[in-house]
Each structure stands twice: as structure tokens, then as C-alpha cells.
Image (cartoon, rainbow over all chains, first blue to last red; front, side, top):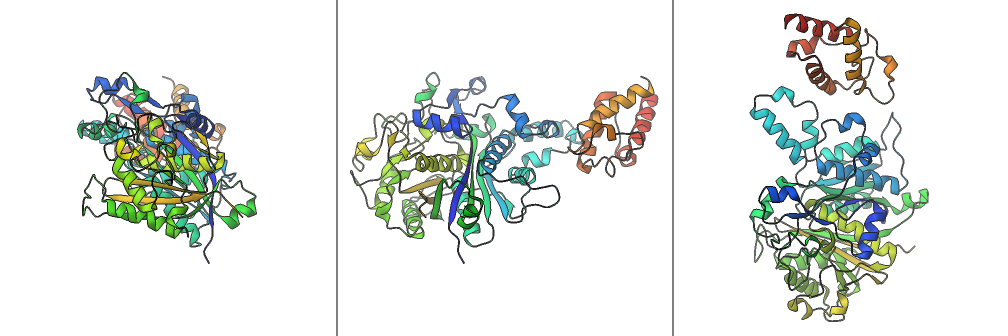
Length: 424
Length: 84
């Protein structure tokens, strides 16, 4: 028996909003979370701006015990715990009592690299011959699955608890993994999401690849320009997003608020073949991924009326739009409304997919398509394919019927999920 | 430092590692860290590090193995302080 799967909880810890309310307002009003980072200047980065959630110290005490806070030096873990526990609460789900976990709930919470700052701290201690001074928490702060392990204990879940990792595809892939687990009847509820550390040790590799904007250090909010003719690279970001996916049966039994339905999706890889490589997508695989996602959702490609792209603000954006246009057989005014949230908070790497899935579901919840920041000058190769009216500059009223959200990652990996408004 | 001062200092260290459902009042000289105070065995490592910092001593792995109760810890601390 295969279950319908719905979204019943959302949580987010984003550069332009910690918590659903602040995040929603920022998306609606185009408030940027990209700021100058003095630390990056000090370390002589070319790109000295980034998206980093602003976490107040007193907020941490609401999520962590004093013991958990001791020696905690893993920003991604902090973001993930905030987003994950918020989503669980937002879904109205309880923390399991002390004796037994909730066997029908699980967690798939991904990351790229976790606890880089903690790892650095440990490396210094180790190299000084001080291994015995590491304490007991360095392992769980730097193991990739530290985030799902932490959340698993905080919530007390007894189904699958794991961490997936597929670069910038991680969060969107996680939604599909959770969807499949519920659909196949192996779980009733899955908390899924992803997180990414902030800081120089995470962002440096991208700076050295020269794919980040260098000329906006004194004008951070203008730097991230997806689909723009003047885009010069992606702005690195960080944070976490989380969604509670649930079988329709479980959601109706609980009388839970249903934000949206997950209709289906697809993941694939270009295998570094054709034009694909470690860092560039194989367009054929991107088109297949999008088309297979729509078919998996039981739709025709032309049914998609809203697209949230990967669209990072590198020179590859026009190619991505071409792939969407080919996949969905639409162009001009027949192209769906399309946006990228990265103009507001940059590219949150492993957290990008989950934060953007949360934002996509919020569009369905609000009956809006959030505006594209810094796209007042859309790239001519994009407007050759898509009428400018389909690339809203400001937030517009439009109830997305079938929304396609895709993420594409290093390693030539792709994921596309189809959300719809819930109709009984 | 008097015996009582050492005990109080150790109590402060141990308190932070108590699970939420174990009250500070439960800490007695004869309390077993793991069996009675329900302290996670992994955290004994952190208690040792905190003791080292607080009393400015260094504990060996064997000391840690013998440190099962609050009293055990106090005796080891005394021994180290005398030796230093």
C-alpha cells in the first residue's frame, strides 16, 4: 500500500531569518541576509561577504542544555538543531517520553561537512600532543551524522535516523528520501532537512576556485544576482532548513495543519559524461531529472506552473534556464513563474536544498511567488527563453498549483521534488 | 583548601553533568557517578578534565578507572595535591 505524503511542519535557520516568521517576512519583502564578514577580510579572502544566520546567545539556551553547550563549536549542528526541533514543534509533534522512542518517526538530516571549527580545535590539540584533552564531544560534533544523532535524541525517534550527503543537492535529496520511506509504509513521519557550517574553513575552497563575487565587499546585499546579466558568482551561505513529512493518514488522524503535498520527484546523476564534470552539470541528466520528477508526480511536464531553481548566480544560470525550458516544454509567457531565493541569502551549500524547499512550501502556504532579488537586469540569454513577466522582481500573488524545486550539486548530481497545494 | 572546599568544588563540577531528572541534592560522598547519579559514562572523561583544570593536577588513565564514586575522586585529588 502506498501512502500519500504531506508536509506538516517547517523550521528554518537562515541568514535572512531565524524562525519561520522572520524568514517568511524576509522572503516576502526581499530582505537580504548577506553581510560583510570581517573575519574573511582579515584572512585575505577575495570574497569577504557571506550569508550567516544571526543566533543570539540566549536563543541557544532554548535548544540546548548547559551540558550540550559546553565546548559546542559546530555551527551547522546549532543551525540544524534549531531548524529541526522547530519543525517538529511546528508540526505539533510531541517529544517521546523517557522510556521508549516513537518507532514510527525517523530523521534524514543531511550535511556536507559538520563541525569544521570543532575539528580545527581538535587538530590543534592533537598536534600539540594533547589528545587526552579533547573531551567526550569532539566525535559527535564532527561526525557527519552528528546532526541526525543529536536530533534523534532530542526528539526520541525510533525509526531510521541517518544523514545523507550529496553536496548542494543534499537537502532536496533528503526530502525525497523521507518521502519514499513514508510512501513505502516504513515510517509514518520523517523529519528531513540539512545543515551547513559557516565560516572561513567552509567557504575558502570556493574562494580559491574563483567562483565567488569579488567586487561587492562594500555592497553585500547586491552581490548575489541569480539570473542577472551582471551576476559574477555565488555568495557563500550557511544555515539549515527542516520539514516534517508525514503520511496523509497520520496527519489527518492528528488533525495536523497540512502545508503542502509531496507529489513525487527524482534524483539522478550525469556521471561526469557529456558536458558534465565534477563541477558542471550534464544538461541531459538535468532535463531527465526534471521530467522524471513530473512524471513520478503523475503530471505532464506542462502542468508545472512554478519553478524554484538551483540558480546560484554563476555564469551557468542561463544554461539552467535552458534546461528547465527544454524539460518543461515551455518558453516565453508559457514558462512557469521562476525564482531563486539565493539572491536573498546566497548559496547555503548543503543547506541550500532544505532552506529552499521550506521557502517553496511557504509560497504554496501564502499563495505567493517571492520576488527575485537583484534581477532587475535579467540575462539576455534568459529573456530569449522566458518572458520577463515570469521572473517577478517583487513578490506577487499567485497560488502555485504544481511547484517544481530542483537542486544540482558538485559531483554532477541532481534532485527535483514536486510540491502541490493539498487538495483532499 | 579544606576537605569541605574540595568537596564543594567537585560538586559544582559534577552538577553540570547530571541528567535533568537527577537533582543536585542527590550528590553525596558515596554516590556512584554512573550507577547512582546516572551520569553518561562518556562524560566521566569531561569530569576528569574539569577536575584537572579546577585543581591544577593531571590524572592518569588508571586514576580515571578507579574514580567510581565522589569519594574516590576526592581521594585521588588529595593524592595528586600531596604529590605536587
